[in-house]
Length: 104
Image (cartoon, rainbow, N blue to C red):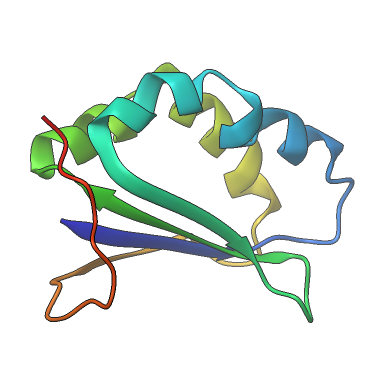
């Protein structure tokens, strides 16, 4: 299961966002086992635009991630600083030029 999350934050002080960022909290430790791959990107021309891409083992792994305390903390700080609601999109893989490892 592939899923992207994208948002455009205000130009507010990014310290609170950075401190709650998934890479700075227990989120990475708590949720990486439920994802096969995770990639966080920031737009080069506009550092207030972000996209996270996840490859989930299954829908249950995505649910566990979404209900984690770390995600709730991150969302509680992020959402009020967004110019629009966070956009969540699910994708179906049709091709790849890379080999992804399987989660056991």
